[in-house]
Length: 185
Image (tube, rainbow, N blue to C red; front, side, top):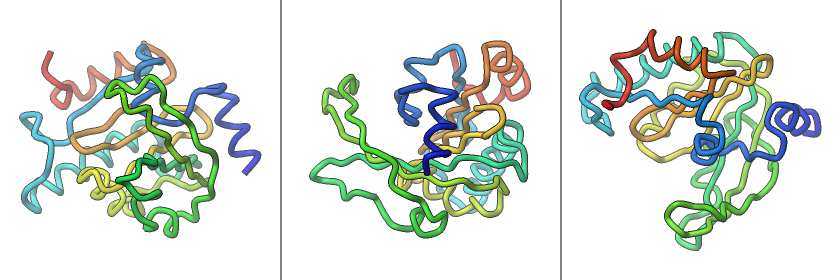
């Protein structure tokens, strides 16, 4: 676990691996893509679920590279009304280990949530993550994957994908490549 922590800190210092926070402090590295056409948030049919998976697969392959070593980080809010974690599915499937808790004091909803982080080293193969992507699209799981060589991050959520590249130029190229998946201005 120490190598895992040192690797993250080598790229991001004391920033937590929480996409909602990272997009605020690293806006030049961040871009968001929608999972469905017409900015719809949730898949309602098997065909729409296939679109969500396909977009996630394509973006993650572009950002992470298939077969590449990644850090898989799952995070869970620790409110009284939410269990910690949401489920044990990701913990068990990816053998996630406890990393640390972090208090999100600048939470835009004013809730000052405490978040628990769990992680492990994995390889990115889209089919392995099919269920996890489906669960994230339904807001049943929260996680991100970071390419260990480049520090690029792919973070699915209910409605789309937050992507963190190495710099603003990479963000601009990715936006040009997937213009039709960007949120409307």
